[in-house]
Figure (cartoon, rainbow, N blue to C red):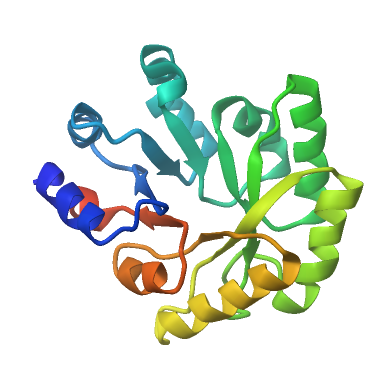
Length: 210
């Protein structure tokens, strides 16, 4: 099932768009199946859960494995996140930016980062507010020397996602960054059509979580 889902998803993706398989809370056998047919890019929401799932596999797959943190990052987990992950998608607070920068310098790692934008300005969601984006970007790049490669968003669930994807693309262009982490299982095709460079797909690839 997973192999067939993978083929269908990849048919819809330009070569430049990266499929991040969202492996959080997935059974081990599904992860192993995805690994068996060559999927090497995975997204996790929680640092501790990711360690349990991927620390040993890091040794097995080495640099061939690419791990993306796509869930909220607490500053007290920054050291572990820098050690395990290859890309951070959820940078959204000055405190976290500063701690990440310190940890990257300490560990001699320079991880690409996305700024998460609260694109719908929803109280229950993480992300920097659109009005604060430019100031936060300047802080991350100039004060913290972080490698900000793009923007990430999760659109409001009950509104047309395409409008928000288009808005995020404009925001990225205004900053001069080109990577867009947007689109999940239900809307990744719209995201791809609007320039997504990274899509985060869970249930459309693995099936519903048990």
